[in-house]
Picture 1 (cartoon, helix red, strand yellow):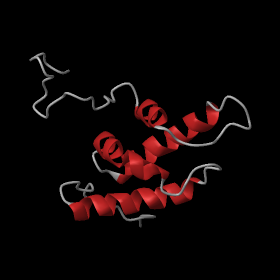
Picture 2 (cartoon, rainbow, N blue to C red; picture 1 turned 60 degrees about the horizontal axis):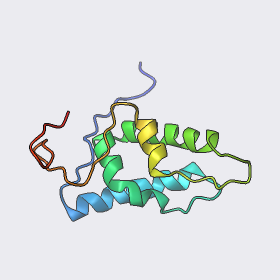
Picture 3 (spheres, helix red, strand yellow; picture 1 turned 90 degrees about the vertical axis):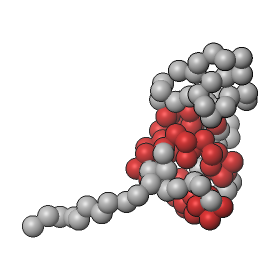
Picture 4 (tube, rainbow, N blue to C red; picture 1 turned 45 degrees about the vertical axis):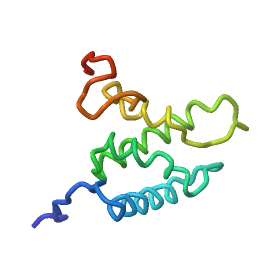
Length: 119
C-alpha cells in the first residue's frame, strides 16, 4: 500500500483573464506562506508574467524557483537591517542559468528586431 497518491496536475494556463486571475491567486497564496519580514503580501504579483514563463505554469517548478529566490534574497542582504524582499533579479538567479529574461524588442517568432536569431 502506498503512502500517498500521485495526482496528475495540468500546468496553469495563462491564455485568458480567468487563467491569469487563477495564477495570481496561487502567487498570493505562496507569498502569504513565504513570511518575508518586509515583503508585501501581493509583492509576487508584479512578477506574474516572468514566473509563469519560467515555470511553465507548473506548481512544483514555481515552488522551487520561489524557494531558491527566497534563499537568495535572505543570503544577499547586505546588513541585518536591510529589507527582506524578493526582487526580479532573485527570481531569475533562482531559475538558473538557462533562464532568459524577456527583453524589449523581441517578437514571439524567436527573432530580435533586425533579423538575428535568438538562442
